[in-house]
Length: 190
Image 1 (cartoon, rainbow, N blue to C red):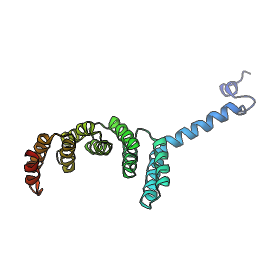
Image 2 (cartoon, rainbow, N blue to C red):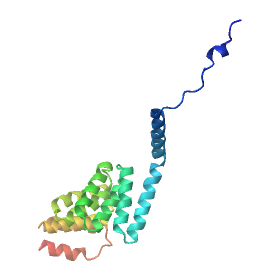
Image 3 (cartoon, one colour):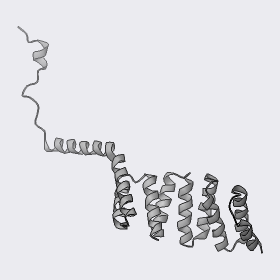
Image 4 (tube, one colour):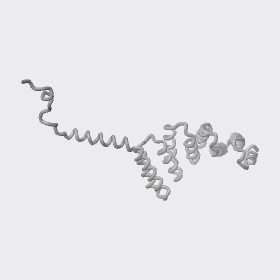
């Protein structure tokens, strides 16, 4: 009698034991799946923890948490914005500029990032570069009032009172509720 189909395909000797290489591959795949699934949660937790440290006045703890978030997701503009903001608050403008530039590479149409990058450049007395970012912020979001003030102030620092007056006039036209603009414009136009 001939063996049936099941007898012919029946494995012999049972499953082969896992080698060290098989175990390493399994562990690495498990870690990769864990990170892929939980990365957004880990980034959020790191940002939240950083905010808690920072609001509690613990700069180093906050920066450590924000940097962890950056390692987990270097292309997350929220992480870059947060680091840029914290660095600027502590007058670490070179680092702030770097983080905002990275955030803008990720999200080039984010008006707030252009505005805050402009502020950090302004603090470094790099007024020409600041002007470009304030202008871009206004183009992207004409409702961002502070961009107009910062742009006009940058022009004043560059010794360009006419350009500053034009920006103040645009501000006045766009936001009629802003007070004392006429006085500032008159001083600049003298």
